[in-house]
Length: 445
Ligand SMILES: Nc1ncnc2c1ncn2[C@@H]1O[C@H](COP(=O)(O)OP(=O)(O)OP(=O)(O)O)[C@@H](O)[C@H]1O
Ligand SMILES: [Mg+2]
Image (cartoon, rainbow, N blue to C red; front, side, top):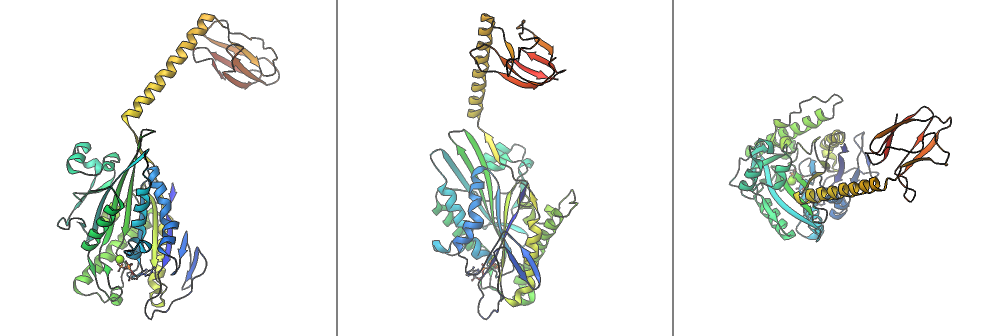
């Protein structure tokens, strides 16, 4: 079981906003409510510092073959998109470009990394392909629903890892782009961001009106160990919760806000159920596209990090407390992250060959012993002779009782010039079965 890591980031105050003072690294008190998180970043924490603390350890997890999810949650205008995507210059890069840049840097001659990426948004409860906006009502499927996963995988160019984990939920028909260099990723993010639905509200000049999810499928081939690992990386910039009176949303923007709030409350509900002391057997992931697509990240096979974006503005205190309460609940979730690994056919062959060689070695050794008629000896550690010290019949199992009064450490020697092949502490009354066929090991009863 792995814990969900939860971090908090306070953005700088803007305009005439009045703010309260933060204290400590992991503890914060807002409006009389005290909270404890994995770390709390204040308004002067840089993009680099945020990434190095909260995002960079995930690259190692991905390279080990774990699924990973990084989600930004919080009130509208609190800095989620800034944290996930950031600006155009390297120092302003957010979590997504930084994690991807480090991932590309992990490739070596021995470790080949194949990276495929989809970029989708959930807008008004429909899934749109941000790399091909004409596909605007994509469906979610489970790999196990496919009758012949391998064949369909090839035909539809779905990422390899979908076929590995049969329960994996994926966006059917979303563009899957193969990435060779960091430049490919930056181009993909640029295309996706331009296609994302954004609107101006009173709370944010460029408010994201959808949840944007970057899905990265990674296949790591260790050419030396002949092992293939798969990691699935979800990078999620959620739409912000919104107090409609304050955001001034009307018309379409109002409909968007209602839908955003509804889908965030489904997310909250799923997390609430997952953390109840007697969690129900059925978690309603299917109640929203977001929770279903993120089901691995929520109590499933994933290492999950949640970034709570908040503002220190006094007039947002209510939303800030609600966000921190959401994070406290999410921190109680227990995930079950596992390494996704297959062993290649080639490495199975090597393993079988090694086993065959070992069997032949022991067969030869056994035959040699038979020929030489060497008599295995049982010797006590301090050379006290036993009533039965030799095993006369090499073909059979020999059973004997220990009759010494004091416990002895027994060793089995096959010949005088070799080390012992087995040993044990025996005491009076023990029944020892000395098993010649099983490489001279003995069992004690
Ligand atoms: N840590 C920060 N440092 C500097 N500027 C920030 C920081 N966080 C946020 N901002 C600025 O605040 C504004 C709102 O941020 P952003 O768009 O990231 O909010 P959001 O949480 O994504 O909101 P929404 O839910 O409406 O999409 C932007 O102009 C952004 O550049
Ligand atoms: Mg945003």
